[in-house]
Image (cartoon, rainbow, N blue to C red; front, side, top):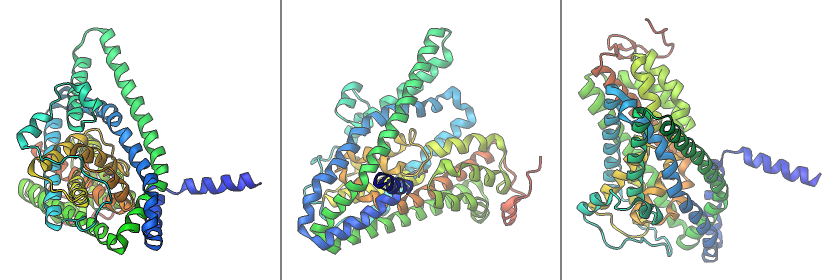
Length: 435
Ligand code: ASP
């Protein structure tokens, strides 16, 4: 009886999505810290374990997921249209991180809150030439062993693309089978790592409680301000990115059409992404909007949107910039130009392997912080407010996918601007696509 009851509670507990449980732990941990005060800092090691578990996952995740991601980027898999899409995706993501960094530099979220004994591991700022040279590992195994994120990402992407080329060009069945075995291994490895991630997140409920208790135990109510500021900074930065890059730069300037028509056409996808926090989950709606409201031809969107849902993440990339400044402020270090460039490089390259599912941005943040030598503890802090941050990121991701798709469709004569929401239709009851 008792066991059944306990199991029932456990199952009910597990049926609540993990991010909400972590959100509750964030609030309860903060309250606990406020009420108990200084002694709550004793819980710090319980939170440190969460941080340690996250760090264990970084290199294996990069290796397994990026091999699969890079396969999609091989020139022979992309073709001309694909090349345009990928280059635009990369450029817009780079803009996104830059805007994230700029807005965060302006608002400085996180300043004023001291992070206990956590400290940045990099004291000296490297110069930009060093950072660029450092992207290429002189010894990839050494880079992996010492947890150097950027060179590891670089090597795995190059290796993954080479593997795809070998697969296409070889006449030998043995080699083709070998490549396939490699992909199977990477795919299985990635699946296994994500299982571990979810296991770690289960512990994260306890870990986040402990981290927040410790922060609020030490800093008191003052600690609320940085989190509110983090959310406000991200909201401002994603708005700036959507308005300046997607609506202004791409739709108004390069496409030469009305941003309003674009927004009305994509609104179902944008709203869906806000509520489900997943680009991949939103994909059917994004495709329907592209087809029935924006009147883009299937040959373009059927390729660019699924690809965008996995490799194009403007919001996620932008968030890395904001979160990096937040983390740096928490430990009282300034990120120099070279370090900010590193954030751009990691965010753009890592999005190749990142899936469009809830919480990906948090995992990516572990890579960015590790590369910068900033404390991973910050991931535990921001995890508590991630359900809010993730919505903003995902909506921006979708807006980016649709904007680039529209531009590529225009370049390839595959969109009809004389109908649909471009000419003021509401997009409420989409007319069947005329073909
Ligand atoms: N949830 C986002 C997406 O699906 C990824 C992220 O966590 O930033 O696009």
